[in-house]
Length: 360
Image (cartoon, rainbow, N blue to C red; front, side):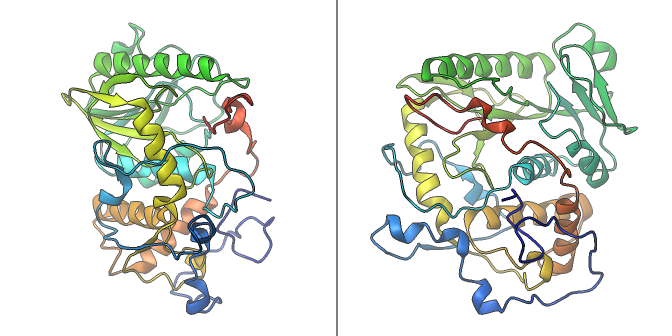
């Protein structure tokens, strides 16, 4: 079974064909059947066969994608087995859409990264989407095979003194790419890594002083309080059914804030088992073949919201009035998926069996 949860045919093993319609095409799946919200099916069996709540949603607002750490609902973690999981999962698209969401906030700013992305070809589609942006990637351990005039690789650390020699001449964004453990980690080992990662990000963001940063927001699995940057905690999308890693979008001069590790764990457990599989009742025409498998779950609503905001901020296009533009953009994104990649690479950081959690 492939990662591609939005297929163009009835076969789960076929990749999308490289044909994008140039005019609206009605979906072959009847609208009534298409609107079953198949990604939300897991809600009812886990909630006494109740239907998922319907939440009116404005796709042009990011509010539904942000976790309010002070007031978001919580659920105590417990191991579950034998439960149906129906959420949308596409690891490549998850990472790509997070990039697009962040870069759309400042679509002409260069991007600095502390290491190579898990999917190196992602820079090619991003360079096409943001034609005024250059990428500066600092990678010590790998030799990238991506060639593009606006994608620059440097074989030294982003905190090296030589950074000043290659620093972008204009204001830039900073993206922290988390490391992927090469073995399964115990909870204690993972907690050490998360603490180290938080401190590393704080140091790099302070030293580089970008206008904005997209940081990895993962806290230790304990009862401690962590001091980290103030910012928007962006909920993950299109990831595995139990994934708990978020992105933190923060700004220059945002300051620091205390975060409760246990509280965040329970908030993310509630999100994955409830919030994520609610029905997000948005108003948008998606009756096209390329969008026929979008429903109104959190992941699909998030993907549409990110594409709408990209069209508005980077292209000055109102996608709600021109849904064909969304279809064309989605076709471009799906065709950018690498032909071959290890779909289990991201699972290398999974905890050992004393307390397993999905991690990067």
